[in-house]
Image (spheres, rainbow over the protein chains, first blue to last red):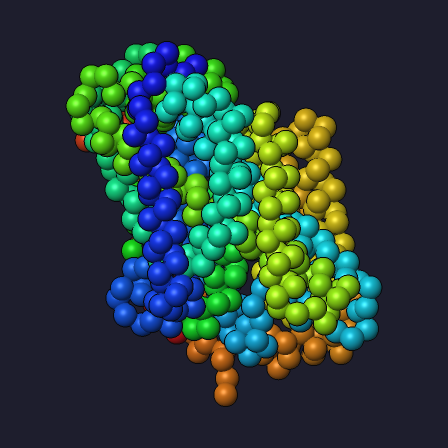
Length: 503
Length: 70
C-alpha cells in the first residue's frame, strides 16, 4: 500500500517533465547537427568518448525499469538467493561476443541490418521456398515476443513507481496509460532521433541514481551490514546458502535463461549489426561488465535492506518495495528529496531508454517484413509513416496486459526469455554450424515452443528447477541438430557456408 | 578481402574451459546449505565468494574479448 501522504509534491512531475524535455532537446540537437545521432556514429567514432557513450548506451538498453523496480523486489523476496543476478547479467556478454564474432562479419559482407535479414540470407537456399517463409515467421514471433514483453515490463515498472511516489494520487492504472501515451508522443515527436547520446546520458543518470539510493538507505536505516544482522534473526533464509538440488539447478537455469536470451533482443542484435567492426564493441567491454555487476549487486542489496526495514510485504505488494523505501526516508531526512528525485530520474531513464528502443525496433522490424512480402516497392516515406502508426498500436496493445499484471515483473522476465530463447538455434547456432538447415531449425523451434508452452500452461513452470523454456530449448537444439543432420543436402550446406563466409 | 576474424573465442578451448568453470563456481553448490556464517565485511562469506567470482567472471569477459577475439 502507498503511504498516506505524498512524499514528493509537484516537484516530482515537474522535474520528470523537465528531464524528458532536456533529453528531447539533446536528441534533437545531436540529430540536427549529426553529432552522435545514431549508434553507428559512435561505433565509427574511435575515440574514448565514443566507447564511453556507446558503452553507457548499451548499458541503458540492457538495464531497464523492470530491473530497477522488479529485480530489486525479487531481492526483497529471495535475498541472496538472487545472487544469480550479477552472474546472469555478465553471462549476457560472452554470449554477445560469440554472436558478434560471427554476425558482424556476415552483416558487413552481405550488407544485412536486421536479425531477420540474417535469417532470410542464412536459410535462403533457393529450394527452401515456403519453409523459408515459415522459419522467418516463427523466428520473428519469438524475437517480437521477447522484445514486446520487455517493452510492457517498463510500463508495469512505471505504474508502480508513479503510484507510490504520488502516494496513490495517480493510481497504477492511470500511470500506465500516461506512460504508454508518453512513449508514443516522445517517439513520434522524434525523441529518439538522437537516441544514442540521450541513452548514454540516461545510462550515466542510472548509475548516479542507484548510488544515491543506496546512500540514502544506508544513511537512514543503517547499511547492508545492519540488514544482514537483522535478517539473521528475522528471516535467515534470505541470507543462507540455498539447499537442495532444485535450487541449484534453478540458479544455473536462470543464468542461462537470461544469458542466452538477452543478446537476442531485436534492438541488441541491431546494435551489433550496425557495428560494422568489432573493435569498438570490444572496447566497451573494458567497463560495461563492471557497471553490470555494480548495478545488479546494488539492486539486490536495496531489496535486501527493504526486507529488513519493511518486512511482511506480500508477493505483488513487494513489487513496490524500492519506491516505498525511498518514500519512507523523505519525512526524516532533508537529503531524501533531492536524492529521491535523482533516483526517480534514474528509473525514468532506465524505463524510457528501453521502452523507446524496443518499441522502435519492434515496429520497424515487423513492418519491414510485412512490406517486403506484400509491397516490396513501397517508398521509404510510406514505410516511415506506417512505422509510426504501428508503433502506436504496439504500445497501446501493451495497456490491456499491463493494467492487471497478474504476475511479478520477475515472472514476466522468465516468460519473456523462455519464448525468446527458442530463436537461439536459428539465429546463433546457425551462425556456427553450416549444416543446420531450414527443416532442422523449423522443427526444433516448433518442438521447443510446444514443450515450453505445454509445460508452463499445465503448471510445470520448472522441472527439477529447470525452467520450462530451458527444457524446451534443450529439446529444440537436439531436434534441430538431428533433423538437420538427417536432411541437409550438400548443396544446401555449401550455400550456408558461402553465406557464413566459411566456403 | 576476408572479414573472418583471425582468432575467435569459439575456437579456443581455453575460452570454453574458463567460461564453464566460472559459471560452475558462481553457483553456491559447494557451500553448506542453510548456513549464513561466517560473516565477513558485513556479508555472509558465501555471498561474498559468489560476488568475487562474478567479478573474476567480468574480468574474464573483458580479457577474452581482447585476447581470444582478434
